[in-house]
Image (cartoon, rainbow, N blue to C red):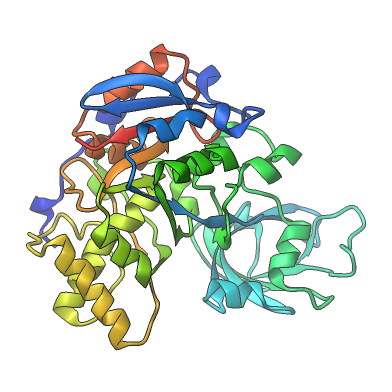
Length: 405
């Protein structure tokens, strides 16, 4: 890797004052009543989210992330009575999400484990419930191996129900830690998009939380085509950048799926792409590098964190996407399934996304770096406007529509 080509970015240059009272702790009563900041040609204006269709070009393509948040937080007890929180990150055995969710007796997951230092390998934990039993399921957890704060945990249970149902019965929705509160009943509905479909995320793609049936209908009436990709959002989305330089911050792998027909539609989109959320942006921009891998190696590979920056990429976007289509056709596949660790920072060259719907992100976060890259470094104009005009911040906060500069 040629480190000279990785941008030298100090994370403290992407800080701003965010008062605690500006963090939205709860969603508004109506999803589409959020405020909408529109940023175009360096100028900010204010609207309401239910009017989003007025600001999106007709004949454009809007792409959503239809991943579904799973109740991934589970609470167990050691035989001593000590509480242990287990946060499921991604399936280990079986490794494929749907196959794992369908298991009816046992499965293994990579997990973040609270109080992990106290926990011994192969120690059997029981679900933390007053009755000591949960509808005859008797869930148990065993630490198989550990690596720092994470480890491989095997779950065992009775009753013949699939693991997905066990999570629904026994787990809690993992709302962001910066809300500084426990999960409540409202989160079961509102920390999920209306169009959530494919289980696997441990965090919601929150830009989509504002969409309602009437907003989607208004977009369709205007001639905006609506399509879905699926990227399962990992716990890495919550991780702050702790290093002085962004080059030292590790991005976690997130799997994504995109259908062959959508890749073809992207190539012919007349008025460009509007991505709903940073997860959709990262998925779409990863396609170029997956396609370049198809050109050079005959098959797609996971997109590395710094792939866009460590060499010159001379293929056109059409060449890269066409190479994916050829690979899928040659292998009789109708969708691309790979993973990405891509980090989008100032200096990144956008090749697919023209507009983005997104919320307002934490100071010194990789998501704020993505915003800065998208608007040509002009992120302070947007955030100063939002702070000065009463916008609510973070997952349950207000929204913005950004036009790329």
